[in-house]
Length: 387
Image (cartoon, rainbow, N blue to C red; front, side):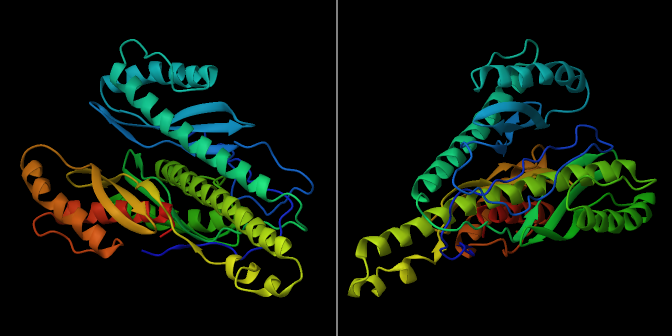
């Protein structure tokens, strides 16, 4: 697995402020922000805990629930479900429950909220996903605070530059799934493409016309605030939602890199200052050896949900010291033959992911669709881990 390469040590006077992104509230397209420009705070630092944090998707009896919170100055200012059970009665139940749960989260400033009557399973999934979003918020705040503390007394500031590929969440539309991947170089979107789009019948023609236009519009706008393509309203809306989640991941990556960069920079300067100008100043403990290097990712990373012909597949990996130590499917096709097929395929795919350390693994014979979905979700988990 590729390792996250951190920026070389630099003197930093403050923490880079990343512009908070808000997803479209209207499927047809409301204003949304893009990647943040570089900016630095001289002589001070922003209060820890700001941005958007996406909780893990939680499986319930009626479908997945996933919550995103928006945080400003350490306070939850908005909560919303980016995934929720759909179809049949679920639409009516969640249409009533979600606004109440969102409001309760903002009021309580925690996941200790009451379940909505008649939506017990959805409420429980919501609370679990909300808690994981809050955990990520706290982890980010802790990293920022540490970076700020270690960055005191240093010289001129610099901004972390985000580069990499980020895959958005798959969005279900009336005509099929839409999923967007963006390529970012030095905080700028240089490419936007659909890795999933509606297919078959008229969809092929509509998608072939709409997707290139949407991709070009994103590169021009540098945000998800782009116009829907005429005649492709549903695809455009799904594209923009998936794009927004890709931008969220890019911004989260920027925050992580900036916190690590600040700590490295202050660490190397601190050792140099303590050694003075003597012979040890340029020795093995100087800024040359400690100022740069690669960080080893550790943690749990959940990939995007990938829709297959037989049902959704979603993979979670555990990473220690930059290596996959565990892979597991948190969603997989169920019922009928799927139980038998996946009972055989999943352990093999999990083992292959750990052995390979990446998503370049062979499909399991007899489980082609599941294997394809597994590999896509695994790759998105690796993207989040920086590998």
